[in-house]
Length: 182
Image (cartoon, rainbow, N blue to C red):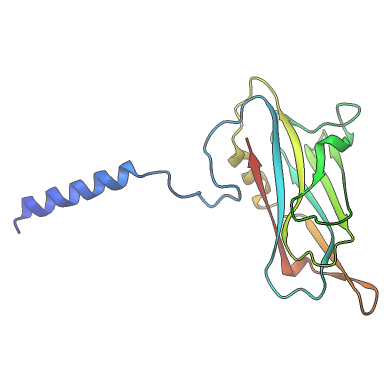
């Protein structure tokens, strides 16, 4: 095979690969959409993933999430306060009685969310959904939310040991992830 033939094949292969770009998720939790969020309401979904054998089923998770400027979370006063019931709901993994609630700090743009359940089999899955609003005139991508929270994994996971009837902290054995639904 001549040098020119090999170069032509290599150039063709490089062109094909370049045309296939965008296939990876860039390492983001939600899939790397690389699209701006339109003004209006969007959903942030939190999931739990067991990274080791859990000593008990998950019965409660507390998580905090930071938002970039231009995003707000619904509270009765429109600023800092309790998140409205319509804006925070149990995730799809919640099969029995569960409670979701949270507070939002407008000054730090941080939502503090909690989930508690009586479910005796929860070991992972979607545990809470949070609606948020993107203001008109802003340019925010899901990746902006992921980047703010990549080094801010503030969460606590607790289970109830049914034998000893005591709480078991399992934060080190459970990872939480988040994803944005435009």
